[in-house]
Length: 398
Figure (tube, rainbow, N blue to C red):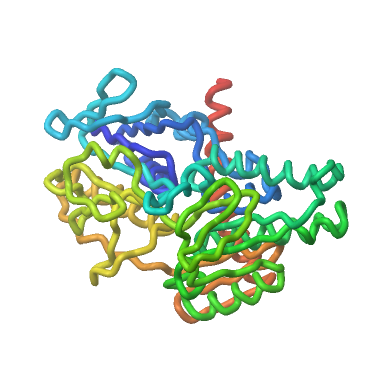
């Protein structure tokens, strides 16, 4: 029986386990410092108050129990790896492995060169920070509803730093929710403004022109104020200061402008890029470690042509499937090909029942049809998690 340790219960870690669980001669242990799987792709709806906590968090222990015995969950933080002994250190103990998959993901990169950014903004990569921002947003709405003294004096600005996928989805959903709140709190809802800020000259840098143009149009229809080519110099408790000397008063801020690989990478002596992601071999091995793999956002992933792939859930899952099958090949003594994948499509949620999407480079959709397609993809993923958890509950009762 081969022992496989998976560090990280994100999209990549879970997909690797689903594939490995099919092999009866493999015992899998999942390690995560959180007891839940966080559906980061749904963060936009949770922050805006349209989704509840059960829509974005799944209990990992129950999920692992759904595999009927050959998958175990350990709630703890892996603090170091001993490659020579083939062990992972956590909670004062060592776990040994035959194969190791590092899937620790990434965190929000609050750029150190922007003074005050970390202290005065929230991220969405972490559930606790997303939850804290949701509370701030709901408190603002509550004060408007209560007509508290001072709550209706002047305009209130919500700033979102970073106009990539996460940024535009959060901006659109919050603007849509605010528009709906106008039925409850009246014209005071119009005093709350959403600002989307990015240093690039366009929103969604690197994405297709169809997505960029239709996303911008939708955001403008929702009343989002878009500031591109805007370089943030520093952030204090009241203002966002730009390099051109202008400043924007704000009430609270989300930052989605960058990622940085998780802290475990700091303990690994191997080549890394500028955002601390591991640079692996073409087979996604940590350099010099034939039985250790890295997948998802904690690693710089490229296609067969050497082009960097975006740190998305889709790429995390593809890299996970590849590594799980590679481990099977290694056990069987079969040679594996180098990893190769591309982005087959992407959908952008833009408030309410509206989305924009591109698939297979040629299919382009927007509006309600795109929303239904995105919803279907999310539903299938979520349903799979729920069915596994239900199996775990039944096993526990028995």
